[in-house]
Image (cartoon, rainbow, N blue to C red):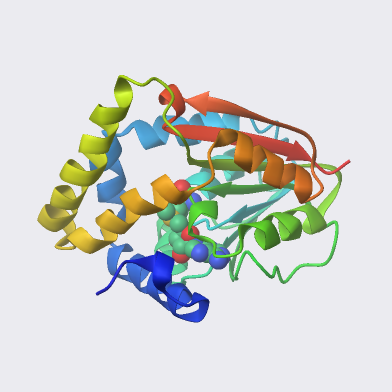
Length: 243
Ligand code: SAM
């Protein structure tokens, strides 16, 4: 497979991104733990913890994949609220639904196969829209941010958890070594797939850094935009309101 997405036409890129996530869907959770030494769980819990989500809220979790964020959100909105898990990839969505159903989480959860760039919901449908480790994979990020803004009610909030730009200079070589030497080897060893993890490291480097993403959110119409770095900027949480 060829992973040099920069030179690939958009339609084909979409197909390739789809293939990456089909091939990793089953090993996805194991790989997250291995690659981050389990820290992704802490980031996700913190992300949902700062969301301000309340009982009864209606939430959309985009690129929800295997359901980690949806499960944490569901704990907070309760059965009177609702969480819609949306993902473009049927396998990821299937793994997510099975995992949550096996944990007895059924009421208040919905699963929708969708493209974040064209959401199948009317305007002002949600109190909160989240996207965790997903915006990076979306081809037209401005369009996705615009759609997130559209489906929020006035006063609603969008939250983005994504890899970002590592801040301390001394940490960068360590991080690069982990990304380009360790990740593909872990991928080869545990998922028999070095290419997908090579793509992961590259997509992280190409994703807009903190201030650029904040500006993109402002352009999409969000107000009171802000971000917070996690783990020295390995990740950042961006927040914006529909005012
Ligand atoms: N949010 C989950 C988590 O944090 O564990 C899953 C993140 S996973 C790295 C990225 C997900 O984005 C995949 O499940 C993939 O199918 C989905 N995805 C990629 N492009 C998408 C798009 N345009 N619209 C919706 N989902 C998309």
